Image (cartoon, rainbow, N blue to C red; front, side, top):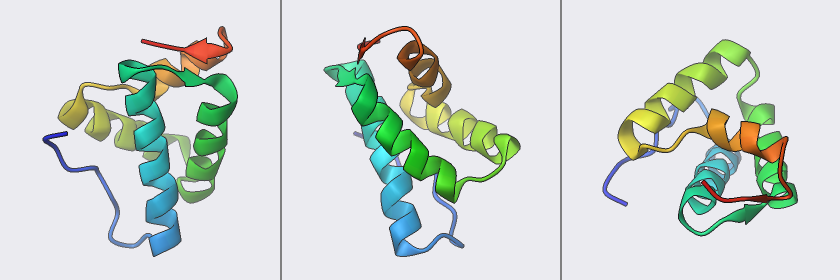
Length: 86
């Protein structure tokens, strides 16, 4: 990993851990694969931190820009598969 995660300085340490957990789950979906349940668990925690759809989209754009990985694409794949590998 040669990039920095997009984080908000207003988040608590627990919030940051939940957001980074989702970033890790997305990376895993692209690199080795992840179960739908594991990904959705991380996504639910992320949604508790990032309340609005616009904020979620902004974070996804920033994360995809630095990593090449899309939160949205993994979420979309989770609706269709029990095992996610992009």
